[in-house]
Amino acid sequence: MTKRVLVVEDNELNLKLFCDLLKAHGFMAEPVRDAREALDHARASRPDLIVMDIQMPHVSGLDLIEAIRSEERLRDTPIMAVTAYAGKGDEDRVRTAGADAFVSKPITLTLFMDSVTALIEETEMRLPQ
Ligand code: MN
Image (cartoon, rainbow, N blue to C red):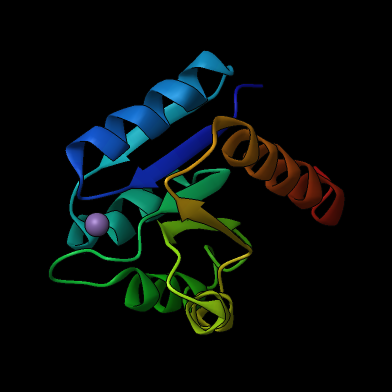
């Protein structure tokens, strides 16, 4: 079955890049430009993976991760944070908030897709259908 990925990113070019990349690898990608709408989208579509930026207006990726993790039905959805790497402290904060993986910008296509694939496979093993 086609895996569905919710992509939350305020930068239009990155949003298109991530979605195009996912589609080229056989995933369905749902773009969301505003983190304030992301929780509703996640509740409605129950994606297999959420890919998100951290630096966003209105609601930061860190707050969004915490909001997702506090919802019982979304708690097990893997989250991959994609953000400019500014030091180990940043990665720690993102992981502490509840992200399962951290990919730094600018992304390399291989690392991005490897991380997506690994998270989906890990989740399938952890949560048998
Ligand atoms: Mn951003």
